[in-house]
Image (cartoon, rainbow, N blue to C red; front, top):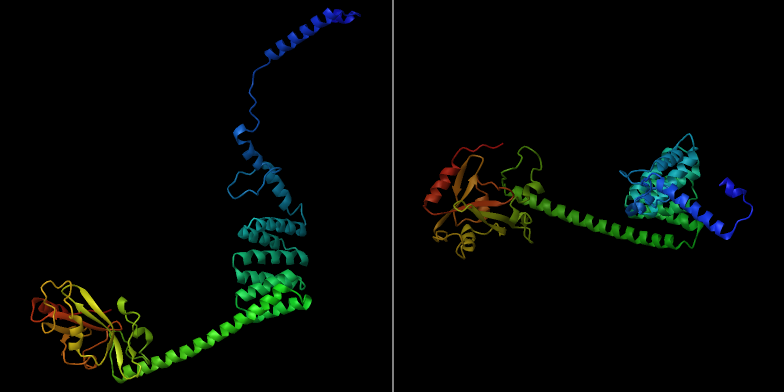
Length: 396
């Protein structure tokens, strides 16, 4: 090469020959290099995923459980390090996080961020007012109206002229039916801005809702007084007849309660004993049980003036579907009631009215209803029923 360089004049042929020689030497050098695959780059099929993880390119904040880029961890530490930030700066950082979550409708995460901002104990009233008001908004969107109202009121404590917080207070007060507070908040807003359309509309809406609820409460109060008066008349009628109940608590005053009179049989539960329109006759729910089949028929309303014969006529107006032998028919059955307190049964006189049967010494209303047992007359079923009920009975 030195010899070539020493020459002062080059012919075209010599220049071409030198260029070819240099190209050949370069190719030989490259071919002699160690073959090694580059493995430090992002895989072609996952480059977008990897880019989204990089703190400079990510489009959303990492979620719990995500792999976090080391650079992101470092930035987070720098952002939330008390030694690198003042209390105000920390509070504002958390506020920015909360606003980000609010924008993406992650309201619970927003509440957490605003709460962390409040925990920084910044003494800047403007910053605290914003944090409380923003947290109030997050609570409002998930219908936590009590918490939202509390935060909005707290924001007003730090910033009394905070219009947004006052408006949020008015909205929450309306939802919580705190009508006087809603009126106060709306009127204070209108003192500052007489043309505040939302406040004017809510003030009217609040007034109408208050009037409606007060009207409904008056109706409910009248209905409750009417219901109680009816119950007292019913209770007096029962006490005058000296009617006894299986589960009556003896020895206590006013033992006749609405719960005691509520039927425990599912088909009868909406039809408790009551007085007729004239207030002279008790109307009873009743169950007629067939021990042979372990089934029952129910009557929701039987006047106490009805005779047992009338009851049987209604029961057997059609043949019982499970009575294949047609044993259950009027004139071929006996009716009993049970005195569980002494463990015995009593045969019912079919000619008696229900009022007379109920008044008998051994009759007790059971589960809020009249309970009778029907068996074929002079049958094996009847004898087994009587023997079974004569066994000693134990009650807790």
